[in-house]
Picture 1 (cartoon, rainbow, N blue to C red):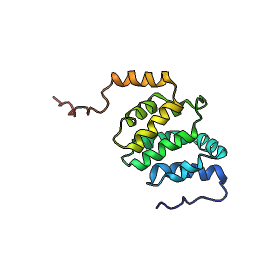
Picture 2 (tube, helix red, strand yellow):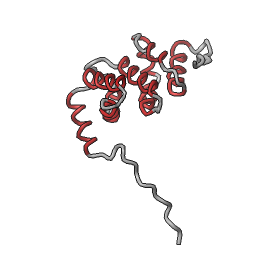
Picture 3 (cartoon, rainbow, N blue to C red):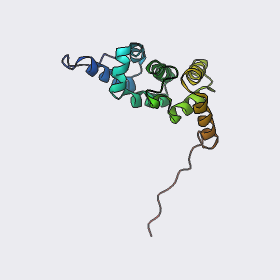
Picture 4 (cartoon, one colour):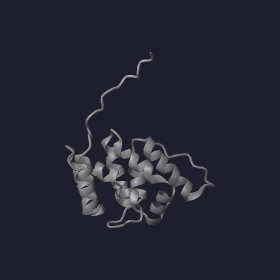
Length: 150
């Protein structure tokens, strides 16, 4: 279990939340941030502290629990139909949710489908589908060697 971040008591609530957002990316136990974001005041602090890129970055974690917590946190930070933070439903996030929606993991698949239905507009999902149809996601790029010097 991860230890609580060591926080200077003089930094206050925002400092503590910033440390939790940072810890979210660095540890295996992310449930704490997920639960904190259910509170409106904490939600705003996480958004203002620049937590979105850190949380979105956790979507690519190899640990399923981290990914599940990241998706849930994004849902808590968002409001259905809300446009206040477009990063929450940016094209890369929606594409990621589309990939998760066909996952072999029932929990991840169901959570991604809820995210797509409740937090994304039909046009966002359609755009993400069309972009994925023209991409090589999942296909590894060939390894290239450095050009030989004459």
